[in-house]
Length: 134
Image (cartoon, rainbow, N blue to C red; front, top):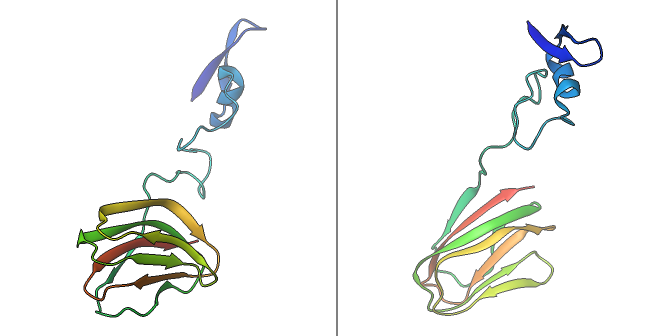
């Protein structure tokens, strides 16, 4: 049982869990806060998930990473690029990673509306693409 102080009557009153916001001047749930009154939306997102696609097949043709609208989290470059990496959405070039780039290129969950395609200009480059469908 939960009790809250009622200023107008100067007494403690029994309140339901969802009514606590009234007595604490809260407007509702904060970001990531647990909703104890609901069976379906009780938890917020606590971690981002992404698929990983490894491109190493020794080809310089355009490769489709995702055929549906997607978010691109980033591209991890193994070693140092000897060519360029072109990222497109099936319509136009969206981004080109230059030669000699290394490490993780963060795309900050860039949205691709059509699909997600990547072209390596050098077949010897290996990359790992982090993405997820919308």
